[in-house]
Amino acid sequence: MRADVDLDIGRKTFASGLLPELIAVLRRSRPGDLIAVVGDEESIGTEFETWCRFTANPLLEATVENGRARWVFRCGAVPAPAEGNRPVGSRLWLYTNFDCNLHCDYCCVRSSPAAPRRELGLARVQRIAREAAELGVKEIFVTGGEPFLLENIGEMLMSCTAAASTTVLTNGMLFAGRRVESLRALPRDRIVLQISLYSATPELHYLHRGPGTWRRTRDGVERARAEGCRVGLAGTLSGDGEAEELGKLLE
Image (tube, rainbow, N blue to C red; front, side):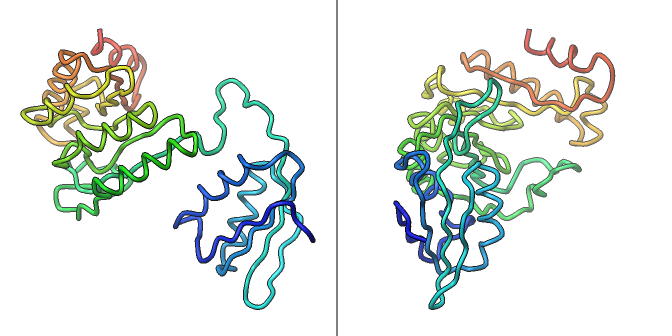
């Protein structure tokens, strides 16, 4: 099947840079165009079919010839997203590191003080931020681990806020010294600190995060707000009135 647009992805997979390539080719194409994707990793076929179905770009053909896989899909007429929905590729999540100053018993990525850092590094974050701006990313979420453990988190966040509105997921316990200075340098209208507080009740918070952590997080909320930062609270609603009690902490 002949295509209007050809994209050679080499050995890229969805785990190693394929998604930005697909988003870019869609933005260069017109609804109805046939796009052929040729690559060396036949194993991504199932993921590619899922991507086509999820993004409403019908997959028309999948073949293998001379050791190379070829998929042809039709660029769909993507409607304007309904209110509350987001177009694919508009959000970017960055896991800057995997070590943390806490050892919460429910952590989905098993972060802790003993976990390897496995950080992205400043240069890579800066490159990703530049690419995100070029691809039209509207929101960047920075998480970990605990991002504020990183020496150069301020420079990372400056790069992200230059590219898109940025939300940082943090436990809020490290806002002191040079970290406060890094907060002061950030554009207030481009960044939100999403501080995680397990519960409005200190005892329940301590049960999952350790003694003394509720007060330190609460102090972090107050310190961030005193610096003029926009703050949101992420909590676990474990009973009636919990949402109201968490909201009161931001009053």
